[in-house]
Structure formats: C-alpha cells, structure tokens
Length: 208
Image (cartoon, rainbow, N blue to C red):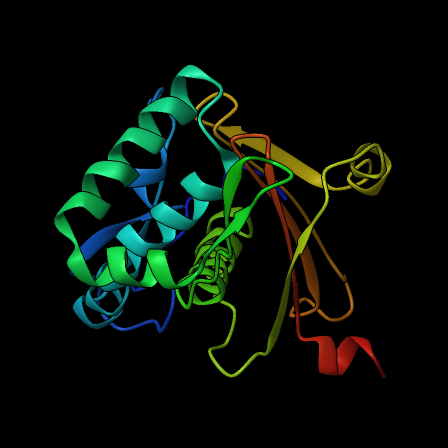
C-alpha cells in the first residue's frame, strides 16, 4: 500500500472537513530521541483540540509500561516524573493505585488509563489515512484494542503485513486490510519495543 500517490492534504484525515493544522501520529511527545521521520496527517481544529488533553496522559501510560532502561525510555520516564511532580491529582491517583509487594521489596502500581484506548483509536485512524493514501476510516467504524505480550509470535504474525519504523526503535507499526472489505483491517504497534498493542477495525463485519 506504499505507492507514491500524494493524498489530498487539504481535508481532515478523520472527518474530511477543511484542514486547519497538522497532527502528529503517534503524538510527538512519545518520541524522546530521533524525530526525523515523524508522520503528520491533516486535521481540523475540532479533531486536533479533541486530542490535546489525551497527549500527556498517554505519554505517561507509555512511559510506565516501557520503563526506563534505554536512553530514549529514560528520557521519556524523566518527563513523566516531572509531569507527575506538578500534577497533584495524578499523585493522589498514583498513591491510591500503589500496592506494597514485600516479596519484591517494591511498590506495584496498577496502571490504568482512560487515554490509552482513545489514543490508539486516534493513531489507527491517522495511520489508516497515511498508509492508504488519503482514504479515511469512517468515524462510525468500530475498533477492538488490546495489549499483547511481546514474543516470537510477532515475527510470523506481521510477515505478510506492510511495516514501518518511526523514530528508530521508538515506534513500529504493521498493518493489513481486506481487499474486498477495506474497512476491515488489523494493526500492530510496538512503542519503544516494549508496549505491544493490536487494533482491529470493523470487527462487526469481519465476524460475519
């Protein structure tokens, strides 16, 4: 699906309204290292503004999931910590969700985020437009989103899919859609090689 047709960048990738701005897919703030080949899609004010309140919460979720063991994830982790230090509400939520595990001599934090699924849906819609040359995924199309354990299954799973890496090893995606039903598609995302997510679109149609 990676031909050289240039999609119309004058219309919003999500709703086809006139474009007023460009939207980074995934959000720019999850890239703490190389930012040379980031993807942008055209967006209207309504869709860009709708997402802005999710960006920081999504970055914090990703940072907690991937840890701080590499130069890029360490930077991401540091930004998350600084953000939390300024956010009293988040600190309280963090305390409420913390559980002392004596056998590990550490706190275990239950990570839940109401930003995660909306953002993955956002990323999927933006990448759909990007990969399939300006075709938008209709807003009424449903999506199933789940986190997966990293493992050997990924190599085989993505072998016949279109694949691309963004910002070095900070974000990777693989995707495939049905020729006869283009709204039925599957997407695999790897954030910093550690957080693995799958999104399936139009599962109502694919189940038939």
